[in-house]
Image (cartoon, rainbow, N blue to C red):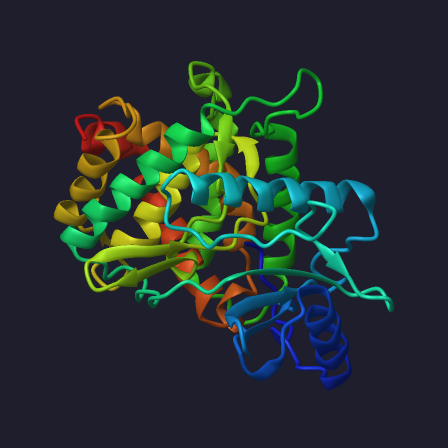
Length: 341
């Protein structure tokens, strides 16, 4: 999810032509047109019209994912196979098209890596505005996704589960604060949040998370990766960062992204509760779990978004910064506000 101030993507006709030529040969299809879909950072994406129907094609940019690294390639392919597994078991996410070798990532002769999948219908929603009915449907889909992912366990020793690290968090915070203090006209709210960030780190006891179990999670679960068609969830997308971490982070991330009203500075109660009602139809989510989910998300993301330069960036980072400013301010009150949710 981490974003920078760099241009998100610039189309490269040479790359497009070589990828489309390879796609045409590999699948025996005739390409009749295409539509750029350059959401996200660096990676080139197109909806490709062919005589066999529309396909979604994503070409990985080496600045975002260097797939010459065998470990990175293995992780991406594992994530894509997770997406296919979920598709086959009723989760609305696009089917991934594998090659003759059974692998989901293709490579052109000149070294461009790309994936092909079916197009997902629908549109993304504006952050913070998803209505209760769609939140309920999204909760159902998310609960089903996590229940299915819970059936998958990593081989012993093969995958280490993500955990928050206090030394890492402290180092990132100190670096961010030092850089911010050297900036002119630093936003006062942001500076206050960064100072509170440090205070929380000085008192936090990470053993509060010891009772949570690791599990596979989407790990980039925000409104830009969720498609709606009317009142239904029509597509969960962008599974590239699937991680063996905590599913609770998906819950906290999507609640903030879809139900936090940044202008009012509050979590929309009916929308958030509707999501949890739908989620619990497929997977247990204890009524004291939400405060821990929010705190886990804060441990993962606060140092990404509470930075002095964040106000200079485009909308997604600004939105994430507002979410972290709010979560930082609410830290002491999370248990009293959300323990019964």
